[in-house]
Amino acid sequence: MATSRHLTRTPRTDAGKALRGLVMKLSEIDDEDTAIAWQIHLDDWWRTFGHLTRERTLFRNGQWGYMTGSARPGS
Image (cartoon, rainbow, N blue to C red):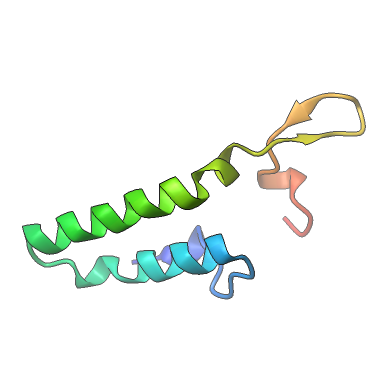
């Protein structure tokens, strides 16, 4: 599974570290009970850090936008 394509290997934030740990456990899912437990952990992550996915920034041109793709430094 190519998780590092969409998620950094060395996250710096608590949200990133928690999400990486969660994603790395995806390959361990082999039955329905494990899948349900993983989903519960994902829901916990969303309750704790989901607000970060909606954060926007004010650009120099006065417009609001999401810091994704080419707007991110180093992308």
